[in-house]
Image 1 (cartoon, one colour):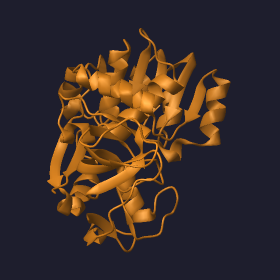
Image 2: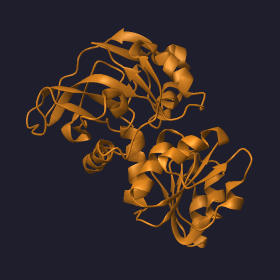
Image 3: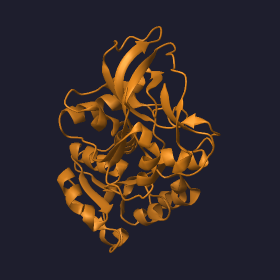
Length: 313
């Protein structure tokens, strides 16, 4: 089958079209014909440095999948051939979506809503699961609470804004001024132009912070928070003891989180998408063969939403 692989770590130019063996599903797994695959920052970080696991090439990148079930391993009981599904391969070791076919446990996928296409579906899994798990599972977000989302127009951020609004929260976002109108359409209640304002000086009484940036954003965010609040750090650089200690002194819970496959959360995400309450903003759509170009675009950090690769068959 066709796939995009690399023989060495490095820049986007190391990504090359290759022919690899078509995978076979194991027990309780499904074989999915990939129609579209979403990109996430972890993809270009793994391409360049080997990612969290310091992987050595060759490997096929990609976690977000939308496609069609083509086969099953023994004991798989959720799907039949022809079912349209979307989901996330296991993070960080389960990459492989930049290919014509993938295999994964059946509960890493859910049925794709009929009202969205494969491109839209492929933009959701990893980023939406990250947002859901941070807001709902970790922070226990309920209606009426105040949420601060950093990089609110980014892949995780713009989905976190929508999920928080769907749960009745008051949503504050940091983003460049050019992206404020977009975020207002998604439901953001207050926006801070990080280029011209210090959010730590203008935002107060926050219950939940979703920090997708790291660096000093975590420590600065503590100044915006109420006692008893939760800050969820998604950037590895933010998972430091200093932040945890400072948060504890203020009566704030500080949690570092990596995303996991989650059947129940994916069903909730699919339900929101089907109801028109959650939609991935698609910044660009390119064919699988142009994966290197997609990586170049993503690494500019200027895109709004997600980049998706389509997979011809």
